[in-house]
Image 1: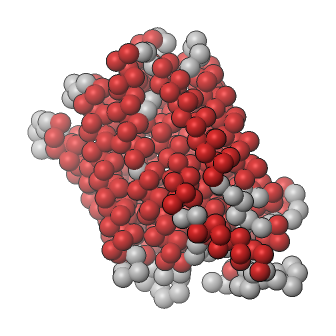
Image 2: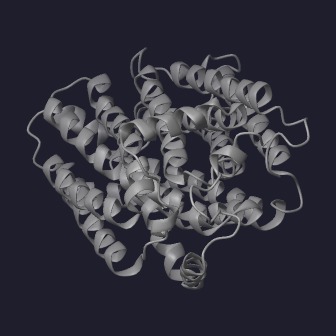
Length: 431
């Protein structure tokens, strides 16, 4: 990897290959905390799906309560997603310069305040603004969690840990819609944000008590904004890093088009209740978790990461084709079960794609894990934010736009993986 040599060249006498005794001891101690670190990082990576998915069953209710069209209410999802994307560009380099702990705690406190404001929003426009702030602050959890994993692990071990995190964080998409659906039994949509405020507060206190600093001072970046921009430019100049980042971003857009459109597809087109939708959403999340564990426990270390990633992209593309054919009426009138089966296959295959794109990209950037994590997250969230309003462009009575967006993004992910990563060439990426 030609970029890694100059980028990781030490400015002093130490190098990443031969860390100082102090940094080695601190990283060893951090790894030994094992279960605690896993649950803390799992909680941080669960925050985005928790913020999104608990709110999903309430989307139709928000549309009615605020007297706004569905396309406007879907922008509350887009705003949160865009905020998380842009926030990572700022917080990632900050964590490379100042360490992981301080930016993370500041971001979590602001997240809690912004979530509380969402509960009192009187109009859809203000709700969109507060959701943007919520996303900007919540970006700290996403970007720093990935950077901490890069601080502690490398190679196959890192890919396995990402799959383990998927087990922890994957519980959030299962329980979040279920909690949201139950909250709607006793309160209106504002109660969902009240619950999220409590969850954010608990997670902030857990981070404060349970997560130590993982980036020693001697490994931190120097310089200001210009240096951070140069680092990011150097990362995206790495063709292989860009390939994995874009492939992961377009795959995430497939996932988010499902998240954004499924409440209306399942509830408005097929007439399911919020509770039924929550149950189906949870089943799909179980599929993602199960396949993620197969990836981490059985495939990683036995099959090359690129081969597993290629299989995952092929399944996602095939499922997207099937969903488009069903939604376009090629097979006549199909019921809820065939559509949910297609969505289940699509969601499950994400367990082969997302952990491996993250691991492969971060292995290219041991010298700037925060900036690399920021680029990974920003590309995913920005593409997802663009895809979100497109799924509702033809109204609430057809699932065709959702399927078209999913197929287009899956094909783009395959194209980036094949053209930029070139997995058939040995040495194109760390195996």
